Length: 84
Image (cartoon, rainbow, N blue to C red; front, side, top):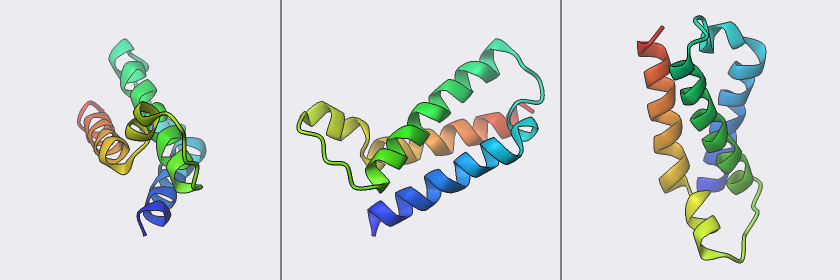
């Protein structure tokens, strides 16, 4: 269930970023670009976890887990909406 949720969450965030990029970056400032970088890293981790990849290294497994990626996606999305 976590994998499906992670995949759907990553797909929705990725779709919004691809279809409506002006919603995410109305003002191209250095702060917005840093937040977008974090968002894309968390988005990549959510996709990796969602498709079922199981890394051998423990630290990579912790990095792409939903405990790490979901809060980062939530915080970056909320901060982009606040900084608009």
